[in-house]
Length: 456
Image 1 (cartoon, rainbow, N blue to C red):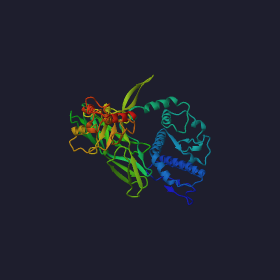
Image 2 (cartoon, helix red, strand yellow; image 1 turned 180 degrees about the horizontal axis):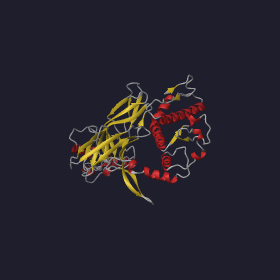
Image 3 (cartoon, helix red, strand yellow; image 1 turned 60 degrees about the horizontal axis):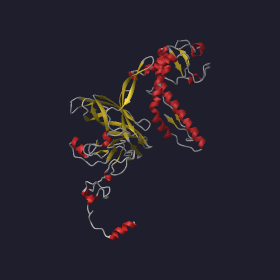
Image 4 (cartoon, rainbow, N blue to C red; image 1 turned 120 degrees about the horizontal axis):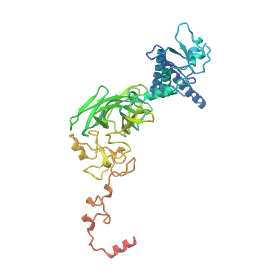
């Protein structure tokens, strides 16, 4: 709940979370405290500049970017409080003790036992400074910003951190991360509704196209070995601070490519929270449109996608063996910054160092003949191409250097043959196998023309 003073924006507005919400009180107090601290710091900066500023819209942007972190930290505080209550310890906020005197240091809550008849002021200093139990040390290891400081918790904290690296909390699956994600000022978050993936069978290396959604697992049968390829998606909200679109759980296959053109996404407006469907996005092409409700200008740009595969690996230390997750791209062909297979060449064109993305199916092939061999539908002319040296996707152009690495993707300008007058026209550089090289070599040349060539 937001309350604005009468002389706003000269005074900062107040943000409060009612106690009658489904949110636990400790999480509400945590979000309220950090919101007020950010508002006070922002208001102090504005006062130093001497220019009044409306802080409500910047506050919404800040809250949208830090919502996940605030609730994660609040959940840790709630977990610590519940564990302390099971141990017979009660946490009392400092603001609830404004009328009492305490010998504890500032910013440190008091520990009060739950025995009936014993008040919070009767807790002695020796009981507060007593040696903590093992459960308290584990809680202190989980929350590094906890206000308690003990001297004998180093071993327990190290054990708790080692337990956090167990396979139960390890990152697993394939992470879909958007590269070069750029969103407009009035754009909220990007949500995936369904993704079109190109999966590669782990047994026979055949490729199949599968569409996954959040409703359930999707499966397809390999056309070569008839293996069952399964994929299940767990989508998340993506923005320019966290461009992760979701996570994939794959069985008997690897994710090769995300077909963005045939995927279905949704974009929300920051002002009215209206969701807008997005279909037909292309890599490197900025999509702009107006919100249907508040008519704000929304825009989104995606340069590429990188698929991270997290799998557990064993790492030996001096005393034990620790399980850790290792990310690598297994099976992904198009990796930004790395060359394509064969530098983008194929059996049809040996001097074409690029792949073409065809708008008819949204897939990338080395040439039109490779597309017709793999697909049965009618081909449409490609409008995008991928450099074979750096895998940078860019608009289609012929005879121009790559926008990423500056390499030439075709050698048509350096042909040694005549090619009907469109190729090499210099007889000195022309190949000796071309009949045009020696044409007119026995023709009589006048003395006047020879004299003019000598002067030049």
